[in-house]
Image (cartoon, rainbow, N blue to C red; front, side):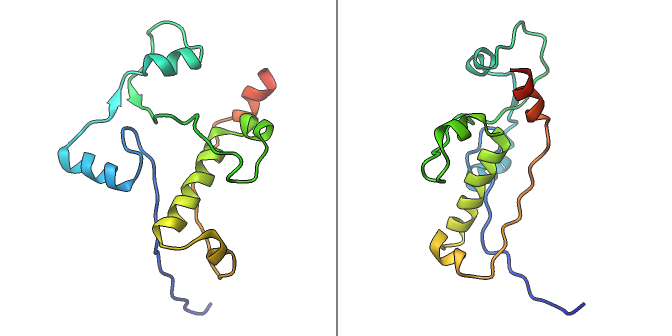
Length: 128
């Protein structure tokens, strides 16, 4: 295998109480603990009943997604795994963070690494 230089030139991320890496860094510097109760709005939209839930890190406004920007139909976006929608948004944000446009990147030898957990979303759709 030959040696190949690799440069990480753009990053993105979303975290509880931090919409981007800068906000996450500020939270770390301030010693902010973003583990909290599930917000009432989230509990209602997820049809969660009662109060018997562990506190955890919750991402805000995961329901926001511009399907037309990604050339995806509203129908498809509505049934798409939220992790996949977020992965598209974060991949775009990483490219933008690197200072490039999508058209520039599409013509380059570029890779975008993404980590998305498999949480069994397909099973939820089957249940509906």
